[in-house]
Image 1 (cartoon, rainbow, N blue to C red):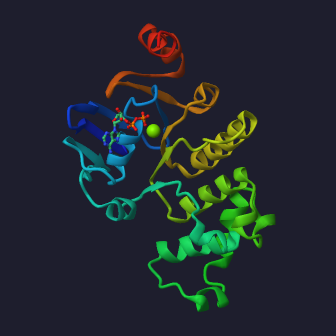
Image 2 (cartoon, rainbow, N blue to C red; image 1 turned 45 degrees about the vertical axis):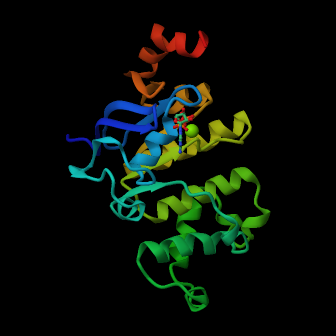
Amino acid sequence: MSPILSVRNLSRNFGAIKAVDNVSFDLAKGELLALIGPNGAGKSTCFNMLMGQLKPSSGTVQLLGKNIAGLQPRKIWRMGVGRTFQITATYASMTVVENVQMALISHHRRLYSLTSFAHKLYREEALALLDTVGMVDQAERHCAVLAYGDLKRLELAVALAHDPILLLMDEPTAGMAPQERIALMQLTADILDARGISVLFTEHDMDVVFAHAHRIMVLNRGELIANGTVDEIRNNPQVQEVYLGG
Ligand code: ADP
Ligand code: MG
């Protein structure tokens, strides 16, 4: 089966710094692929290029065979590349269900206004998505009062509202306690698996990575130094050196 995402020789320089240096990889349908590496390795730069926030210096990115490198973020997002958006202050005064409704309204290219909410536009669909992430009982709460972990689950529901083919998650569990991290990634993995959505994620917590990734890629100083299964990466001497040797 042809890959969902195919990245070839992707590079990005900042002046003399090669933040991402000639990176190539494929991502299969339904695959949960982790991108790891020390601070400054180039993980976020790589993500920003995949979602159109940064233009590559060179290289190609194909989504289902179409080149998306250098396209505007909105265009890439419309083509099915989702990400977990931070729920920003703008939406903090809205309820949980309204946030998901708003995402659905945007996905269906409807105009939103107060009447959308008065008419309960997409409310049933929004509640179904909240049920998926285990938050239907919090539907009427305001986002401003949610616990951090619940906000993360809401972000996942909002991302799902856009019906993505591929989800990019840059440090989805940052700021969470270890037990919460495992639970969030377990929920994410189960939902995405059930829907056949591919995921590329970065994560500092190796327990989370080893527990959930189907495959792991290791970046170091912009270069992809390893790409393999959990066991292969665990036992790779070069990876051990990068992580332990400092
Ligand atoms: P990671 O996410 O793996 O920690 P980054 O992609 O953020 O790494 O950074 C990779 C390298 O690129 C670092 O050396 C960083 O300082 C540099 N870098 C990232 N963004 C910029 C930028 N906008 N301008 C200049 N240098 C940058
Ligand atoms: Mg980063």
